[in-house]
Image (cartoon, rainbow, N blue to C red; front, side, top):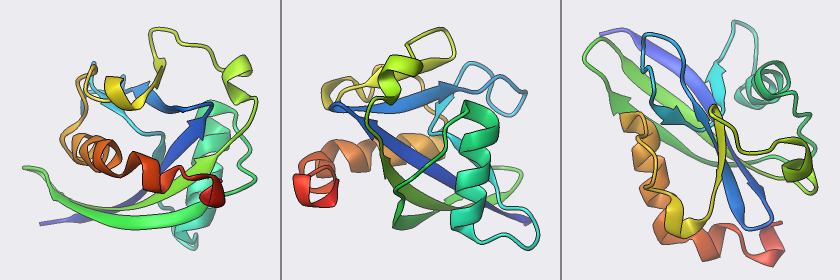
Length: 137
């Protein structure tokens, strides 16, 4: 089975995290944490910064590694490095719309996540206070 290496950013701002809607055939109408595939020659951190700039127009200043999620889809194995990216003031620039939503801890399961991202949402739900404690941000 092919392994796809990818990254995602858990973008945290003002008590909420950013979810983005997937538009392609791999998960139409499903939600995910922003990110994408790691390109040849890139580190996971470089890929995360590039993807967020390209896809969301967000230049990440602070970024820290959280964990690597392994997930088997029917067609491939996903190995995804997860990063936490605390930002200030970005919610003023990125408002909720049909393709992006800011979710609080109690709203994490209000969207239909892709399977791997749903696992991340569950992790966030149980570790919210520890992950987003003042000393980490």
